[in-house]
Image (cartoon, rainbow, N blue to C red; front, side, top):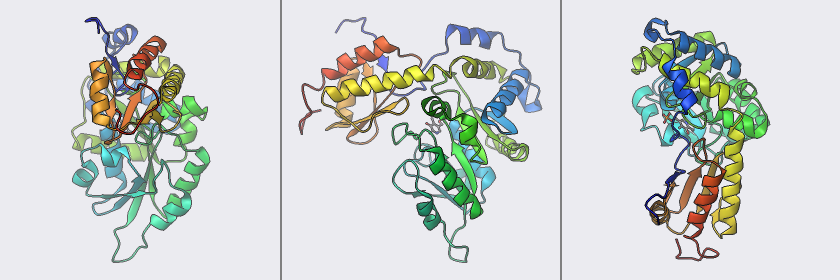
Length: 348
Ligand SMILES: *Cc1c(COP(=O)(O)O)cnc(C)c1O
């Protein structure tokens, strides 16, 4: 390999760096103290987000983890059960926050990116002295651990109405909800209309350096605002970050289609090379099975391609703003060299 070999980073869509135009927006941002509610850029971002998501209000928070966790805290009491999907980010990748910070038990339902309404009803315990009450249903769209999948709006609506009938609140971890919009043509507002609160990330495919929003009614967002302060997320001249978010919402949504196309073409190329692709990507996340995922990840790194091991045998690759068509072709060439012909037992 030549020393100038460019590393192609497919570990996550969080690795993007702000573009020159986004950096200009950051440099020119009007700011104030957002803990006093006086940062015009944060206020503008929150207004834009609420409007896009079709909710009364939105709150800017530092991370998607905080967005989920303050939403959980606002919807539940200690000892409650939160129902979530298998592999849910808020259970698997948020450092035990739901238990530690809200005192809730998270119980997963089904084995896919969304259970059906029957499975949900069966998972809601009766209200009696023996059971912890289930008070929140949380879904994730697109579903990270299942490979960026997007369940149908009909399934989602059935689920949230079943939850509501039984008195549960509903939260959508929409970290990549804009990917779902672009992939399906169903607007973020349509997805969000099925839920009480919705969060989404600016720092993933949208390419901003930092930030997420939590959206809901004015009352819910007021409660969540208090939780943000309690969890240490009150920021001051956060307008420099909000400006990047506004820029991202104005310029980086439609282009997500390119990431989806790149993920599909990478999947097709890897499948043609004999890799076991879990399913054709619906959005920007690709999962494939190998004999030994950590060994594959190490060998790919040596060839200048970064990917993540999800399990002992499963590898994840994501496409994003900082990898173009040519990078994807190059990544495919380099990864192909790790799979000489159809995969055999014992090969990487
Ligand atoms: C990335 C992500 C989050 C939040 O992650 P942060 O790194 O805390 O911003 C939440 N949910 C899902 C599905 C994610 O992919």
